[in-house]
Image (cartoon, rainbow, N blue to C red; front, side, top):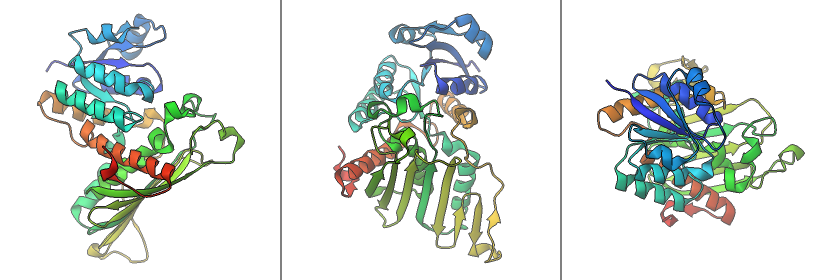
Length: 344
């Protein structure tokens, strides 16, 4: 089967992970890169093992009829405009998180994609990680019963020691703690809990560490989610912590509980005093080179070849998570609960 040709927009940290992951799939290959900084096409082609054309003008790259899709790896504030232009050009979309930094931009992206009828893949790749593929399988097996409470928390200090810090400190670039990074945890919670969120209550604060004072928005937030069926959940997003990366997961059900890579179930007759351990790789790094992009992109390309939407991470899947993020940030700003129905 002929491979899909992919053009990458933005050549930074994310692109350095997207390109080898795309090229490692059975159905995709990167054939173009569009960057605002000068790049040598021969060097890129040699580095990644595929013939890559370099562009400095996005419109010129999108005009290439041989290009089937784009992978948007630029700064978050640029995602919406670039995705809309690519959709109008008839290109399928891979979009790094966050999708955008405002509800208005999200709605514009949804409209453009719907009109263009292009397929989408959003980089909430944690859904394709060993940890959450296994966790979802455990939930679906029924051994935990009905999950009535869940918490998934994101702890990852993004300070001067981290490349993203340079631009992430600006509100117009990073947006919020949840938009910047914690949206991965919120998305994982929604995957595990299922159902629709009715309202959220969120509080936010900042670290007193002088190295983190450059942030123009609160760097730690905690959000309580109330689901329409009465269940509840919690997401902490902490990008100012001074500790090892930790993606905390705790799910409580009617027949058992799951804690990170451990579980207990009354249905299995196991020792009530001990956790049983699951054989899985924990989500324990913020480094894009450790993210399960290849599995996600493979699923996208296979779905595209079959003419169907991919599982788990389409634009519409990701939009639901972003809506909760926007409601949470609004709640923290207003100091009151926010219903999802308030969003337009």
